[in-house]
Length: 147
Image 1 (cartoon, rainbow, N blue to C red):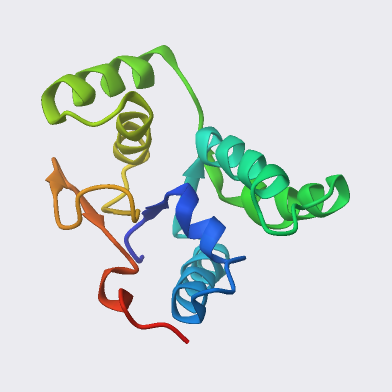
Image 2: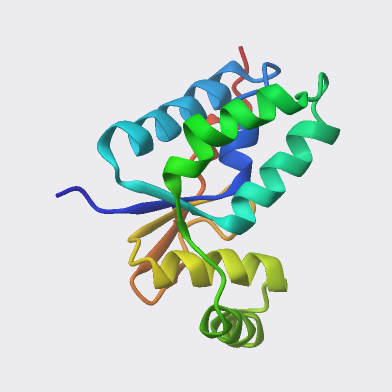
């Protein structure tokens, strides 16, 4: 069975960003594989952040029907990490030990709790390992290459 991975919010945002086609294609590939192979997961935090960004900050914000359709088809099937008091405690510890913001620490804690081996995020320290979780910037090798 392939190793499980966690997708941060920015991966979903890049699926809709036509300014950088390479990042968009990479994001679409990760999300597609997550859905097809049942190996990628997200947390409720990712759902909340994406729905907020997609309905308020996109060049053409999603309307309610588009948001619901994406929620049902993509976000809901991937959402396996839910908030618990233990998750919040872990995030507080990670924040204190690693220096990340609370919300970034919460993403890391959710990935750890779910047993993921990789966390794909553009916003965290590429290559860092937290216990058995490796943080990978899925767009790192694409920087400076547009089109």
